[in-house]
Image (cartoon, one colour):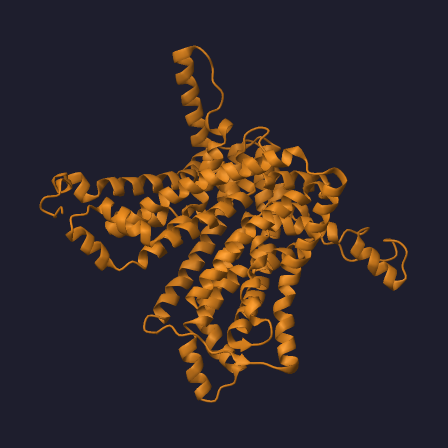
Amino acid sequence: MKTAETNPMNFMPWRRSGAGWRLGAVLIAVLVCLPVVSLVLIAFQGSAGLWPHMLANVLPTALKNTIILLAGVGILVTLIGTTTAWMVTAYDFPGRRIFEWALLLPLAVPTYIIAYAYLDILHPVGAVQGALRGLLGYSSPREFRLPDIRSMWGCIILLGLVLYPYVYLTTRAMFLTQAANLVEVSRTLGARRQSVFRQVAFPLARPAIAVGTSLALMETLNDIGASQFLGVRTLTPSIYSAWVNRSDLPGAAQIALAMLVIVVLLVLFERHARRNQRYATAAQRPRVMSPARLSGWRAASAFSLCLFPITLGFIVPAIHLCREAWKRISFAGISPRIWTEIVNTVAVSAIATLLVLLCGLVLANAARSYPGRLTSLAARASTLGYAVPGTVLAIGLLYPVGLFDRFWASGVERLTGNAPGLLLLGSGAALVLAYSSRFMAISTGGIEAGFSRIPPSLDHAARMLGRTSTGVFRSVHLPLSKTAIASAGLLVFVDCMKELPATLLLRPLNFETLATHLYGEAARGTYEEAAIAALLIVLIGILPVVVLSRLGRVKA
């Protein structure tokens, strides 16, 4: 058996100091931050003639719509997420066990898919409005029609219905554990359940609610498909339009930087909430709250309250997609190009997932094995991409990727005399880089959480037996964190598969994924053609929901 004294690794100073792990962590953090730095450089290149046009015709409306949309979605997700989290935690009623995980199902539906589905469901000449007119005795849409869903209120409601699970997840975890002690004390002092929620549980859960709400708002800011389908002009489509329609990259970068300010404010808001949360719970012992049994009309009300967001946020659009997909398959079969798009989607998502997991392992192991300011800063900096909307990230990546492609082309031409094509943009590698930068936070956070459950004594024992840091990582950290790594990988894969804004901007020519196929068909109004792609995205999106519900059950 090798000992610490006889192990040859101990005679290699750079191996003992972990310089390789530290360097790897810093390089990954630099690559993740590169798009933001690049965005600033692009913006400073100026944009002649853009701003007068934007200030006169685009930005006032886009900024106003963005603020109204964020405010409306924020209020709605907070109401639905907090109320449902309290109901399934504090009360016991028929169906509660199912609602605990079913309330997460809308998370499987991307925002652009719910917008696409409801536009078809609530079309003035569609089945729903036709049935209503038949019941009320009207014969045409001119005599009676529902308010048009293509409006700000429609966008707020639909986004709120699919984004509330972010608040539900974080708030329920808080209700399950940290509120239990104080709730039980309040109950023994004679407080009623309603008073306990208003005076104890809700104030204690405010940081968790703020965290979930800020995540939902960042997803709202990142949205491009739903708001465009519903006719709401926000900042994100303005960036896309400035670059694609006006071919003005610096102008698009300037608008993206303005949007980044909103993101930074949201992140600061979330960080402030986390700081308060850590302070308030430092001395508490986690306990599970005992739910009170409901019966009669109270149980029926609780059941209806939980069923409502699931029905509108998942069941109705899922049934519609199944019906439309079956009609399409019965009429014309499955289009051959859908198979190519499935392969494209799976291939690019799988490559990005492997890359993100590899980088996440380096970052998490560097932070654990060599704790210090440098590795901690690298781990935190690598999460920056998740806070940056996909459109902003794609614009920021264009400059370094284009620079590399020009350098590569000139080098190959000098050597061979032939001009090669684009290497990164033409091959989809830029898309993989964008996915990796955007979802690195999921990988790093998930693997760090898995590592945190391993007692440091195991590391010490392995080092005493002569293992190097890399050996401890290979023999101890990896085997004991398999579940956390697999969960992080699954979440990253599904998020890559659903990502739309960065895919629209960075995909190679004639390269379609399920998300871009759906976006293109819905933009042309050919909804039935997109139903199969939408259904496939929803079905695959259910996978992380199952993982999240199982993890939540284990924690409970």
